[in-house]
Length: 167
Image (cartoon, rainbow, N blue to C red; front, side, top):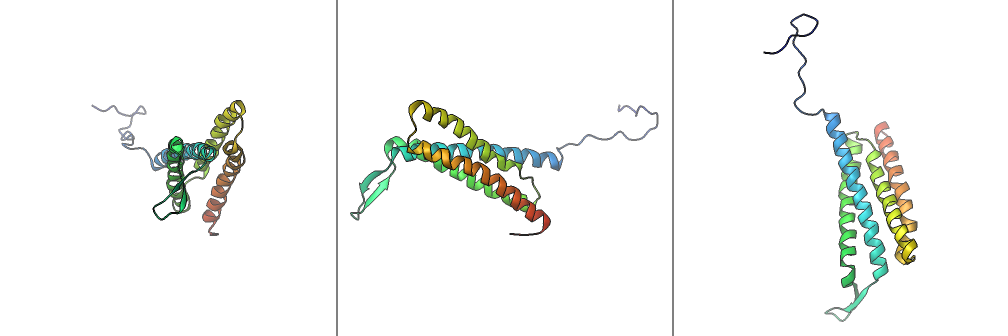
């Protein structure tokens, strides 16, 4: 039997929500997007560092043209880069659409910055220990730029969409 309220009147007790509120679901979705963007950026940097360092495997195709292929030792790097590009493209585009249409927050775009900083720390230490190759030098230049530009663009585009000034 349900208990009556403590103040003595027989008012109905407030019911607990059966499902999380919309704000909580949006927050959880934004967290998933931030984590996916972090992983995607880390995978892209990993793939680029390994891919640049391994170079090309030049082959002659059936038409007699020389083409550049992925070397056997760089297959994991290639798959990491392509998986990271897929994560960044899919979750980034959905995040920007939801930011513009459903007024989501812009902070999940910091996932790209966190992934870039994580990659800088991991690959920067590895490069310091084993020597900086071309892939490490590219990563040291590109990752910080992307880490700054993506959140800035997300906030700027979101603010313009919120005020009605479309770019």
